[in-house]
Amino acid sequence: MACVRKVALPVDGSEHSERACDWYLKQMHKKGEDKVVIIHVNEMTRSIETITKEDWEQHVKDHTQKVKDVEEKYKKKMCDEEAEFEVKLISGKPGEAIIEAMKECGADVVVMGSRGLGAIRRTFVGSVSDYVLHHSPVPVIICPKH
View 1 (tube, helix red, strand yellow):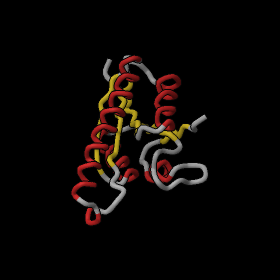
View 2 (spheres, helix red, strand yellow):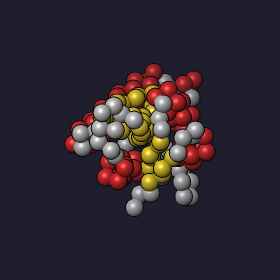
View 3 (cartoon, helix red, strand yellow):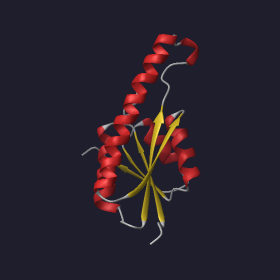
């Protein structure tokens, strides 16, 4: 059977992202009907003009390892549930990059954690979740940590 629903799953390595993935796989996933698009955004936290060569090289090294770790974690979860999936690794401002990736892949729904690893924290919903919630052209399911 061809996939009929594309599910965008933005992840950042946080337990909130992992919880959203687990919730999706347990409560919503339809084997053979869903295709999960795992979206991971490389967020630059400092201006490129103010970063030294050494800091840049360390950032690239750290990010490369983080991406490998995140990718392996979610690949395992998807394979364990026999879920069809693809991984999109992109750079930019997380909220905007997620919206763009969703549009590019033709997502029908987004499932994401309520907060992530970003430096700025909000009281109830993280700034990236809030951005996606207010700018998404498709339904957004935000999973709380608990």
